[in-house]
Length: 236
Image (cartoon, rainbow, N blue to C red; front, side, top):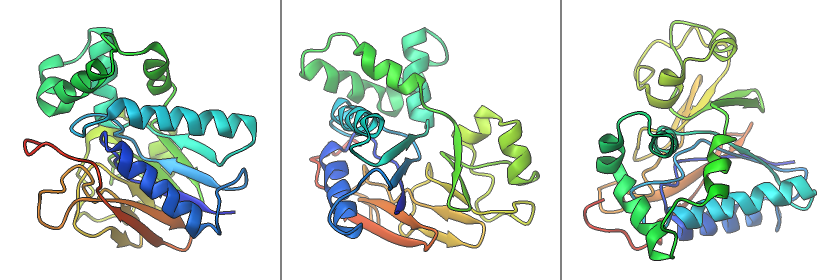
């Protein structure tokens, strides 16, 4: 029974496939119904193949529902939320466009989708903001450092769950359990008593120290990473 949390994918479909293969090896050759994959969000934007990422996640979801694959937990990231806001005509579409939305729309158009596919949109709508397991809480960006994890989860502030960085370098003594998150790219995973950060900048392969997609096996806190293999635009 393995549980892996996986960091920000950002349209790096080939890299996601490579990491899933590595995790299958790590789990003894295959991931099955007794295993769990927790994705901390940001599936789209910046990378070259956002639709390919969501295709893989939907396939994992369907295999989980059929009892033929690992249980999938798919959290929402701020980029996923911006894409939903674009679909709904809400929020700041220019902010999304400038932060990878243009690349996302171009990647759909390149495969003949002039509109965002309904099943992809509905997949993102199903994504929750937080989850718990293996003695940890999981969220995309972080939680309010002034409140316990239990209080955060009981009354979750979406803006904090999707966007915060207040926990970095902060006093986390109010948290009674570790929080696993992505959102902020780091050269090495954060492995602190109350904080595990697993965004190692898969989509930023051109930046020093970044360019890996990372998962953490829990509760043992063992990190598994693959180098980015997608061909990325220099403008990413």
